[in-house]
Amino acid sequence: MALYASSSVLLRRLLRRSTPASSSVFRATFCSSSSGSGPSHTPPPPSSILGNDAEVANVPPLTTPKLFVSGLSRLTTDEKLQGAFAPFGRLLEAKVVTDRVSGRSKGFGFVRYATIEEAEKARQEMNATFLDGWVIFIDPAKPRQPKPAPQQDARSSHAGVTTNKTVGWCG
Image (cartoon, rainbow, N blue to C red; front, side):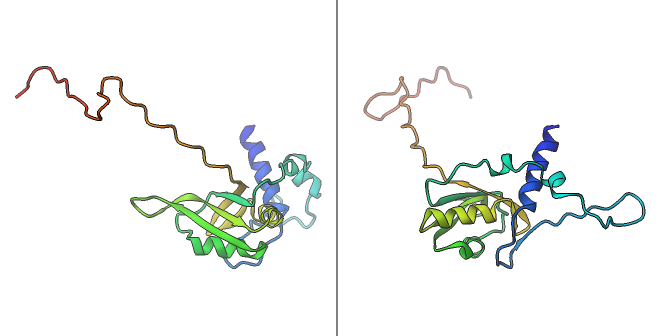
């Protein structure tokens, strides 16, 4: 039942938005067909597909012009991300987070706009859309949490030198 509810929410998000002007962004199109004689010529009423918009429209307003973009393809680059989000306002930064060792995308990134209004427009238009063949999701970026200081081992000396207390010898 939870799978049905989450797919229902995703379907509503995909169906309620219009396509921005970008060649690499695609929308899902859903067709219904009857089980026998071919396609149905009378689509079901929108209320039966979209249901109540309360759960989709119940998103808090943005407090920062920086957005977190998740669900990116491993092939998405900074340039593709910038091209997809540029139509919604003055884009200050578009960054795909990559692995330090391999240099490949980690599947998420950040975009930053000049104003909160531009960021809100981009969030509304780009959330649950296809970019490079993957469905992306847009959320407000959260401030980076400071990493806790490394805990010093109680057995080590305070001079920065650790002692090895190996007992016995093998070999």
